[in-house]
Each structure stands twice: as C-alpha cells, then as structure tokens.
Length: 131
Ligand SMILES: [Zn+2]
Image (cartoon, rainbow, N blue to C red; front, side, top):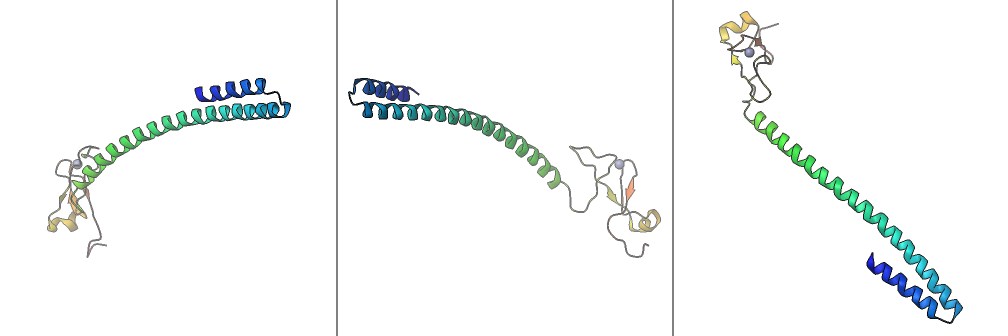
C-alpha cells in the first residue's frame, strides 16, 4: 500500500511541475489508473484473507474426518470376516460378536449365529436344505 501512495505522490508532483499540458494530463491518467489498481489490490487482499480462513477451516475439517476415519477403520479391522455382531449388545465403540450355532441346531432355530448374552439369533447367508 505504501508503494502505491509513493507512486501517486510522485505522479502528482510531476504533473504539477511539468509545463507541458499534454504530459500533465497523461500523468493524471496514469495516476487514476494507479488508484484503480490500488482498489483492485484491496479487493484481492480481502479475497485472500477470506480464502485463508476458508483454507484453515477446511484443514480443521480434514483433521476431524481423518480422526473419524481412523476410528472407523480400526473398528472395522477388528471385526472378523463374516461374524455378525449382536444388534442388541453391540455399542458404537465395541461390537459384540455372535457365536455360531451348533450344526445340529441350525435347522431347529433356523439360525446360524446366536448372541451368547441375549440369545438373539440370526441367519447368515444361504443355507442348504432350508427353505
Ligand atoms: Zn445380544
């Protein structure tokens, strides 16, 4: 900002000291262009501040999402493949795994897995011989 003011002052000084009217008017034209440039620069400066703030908040959001993602990743990594969790006994942070039903009881219960805690049972996948 200081540089622009110096240039404006210098052109004012030149315009005043120059005897040639044509040169003086050209100097005035240059001066108004410089002032236009100054307001454009101010607008850019403001836009830059807004972008910096937006960038900061996006960085924070990324951090939040990464933390959330890590939690989800470690939660899903601890779930053995194909083992269902009990909808009654599981919590967001700790899944409660169901136990496979003994093969003799699969037909009887029409279920493949049972919760050892609340006895909730479920059928996972297609079972042969059950319609
Ligand atoms: Zn349960």
